[in-house]
Length: 479
Image (cartoon, rainbow, N blue to C red; front, side):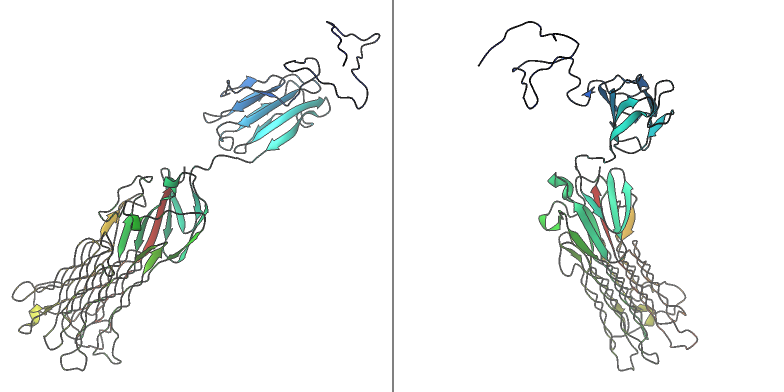
């Protein structure tokens, strides 16, 4: 190996200096630097000088442009063949506040002597000056906004936002589809409310029917979603938490139970039914229990007690011969915290029609009230109170029990009121209209009917109210 040590290598004649021949590799020693050979890369990025206002670019430099505070302009330098400038959206705000690119004097950008705007989120561009005909040409343009994925991404239901959270509301069946899970496990634990359909209110020919029980109410509030939860928040109990991954989660929204009808009608009416179950992932809420109901004491049908479920249905109030005074049991099947409460008993006082009043259906947080007793107030039992949560961004109550029906024809007294959270009200004896249905998408129980004299001109007399359908709500942090 030969070694030549000189300070300067100059051409013998002319201005061209050739090192090596075609096919040779010329290597500069370790630690050596070069100058005069032209640029070795694209641009030198000015990471220590983030631009926030109008400036003039320098050949060979790249700039991070922050337009979060407003639009501004980048003035390109005077063009010379091979000059290069790069620009990038620093805060992903070009779509809100544009960045204007202005050529020097009468020079052109892409053959046109006029400024241009960058308006795409996350955009980055590189301009090279070619010649006077075309001026600055954009030789590289990225419109993809590649960022770290800190939070989960999902679709399904009706989507709203509250602060840094997204809220998916399902009022019917659907799928909560997670397309990307968050790298931080805590951000994959979601908040939810799952409410089942409310039970149907009972119908009667004699006495006062029970109100339908509310659909089961279950809630978990994740620590990553700041809102005021109901008293039934089940976090941090392991069986109640739902941590999602990138897959689809089928959603079932339970329908309300059907209302009972007077058994003395021709054709005979039908019994009330329990509400249907709502589900999300491993979480199921049971439908509300049906309201108790009864026929005529001289007929073939006996009374039917309130049914069990998420919350229990209220009992039937009539003579002992008809029966059915018992109320349904709530939190069936059992969950912790309890998904609902018991219904109120009916009062089957045989000595006076004033005492034959239906019990209220159980609500998510308080039990239904028993039917009024004689010689006390001739009232149907009020439905139990539901649970109030701010999961949607404002306080909303779900899971109110249906009010019991009142048989009495006394001048004072009232049917049972529906519980807060969508419970339907009961009816007075011989009412010409059906009891009130539970409110849709609250899981409220239907109201119980009052005594019907089977008057053909009052076709709705003796009919209970249907239960309200349920709802599923999912909330998580998205930014």
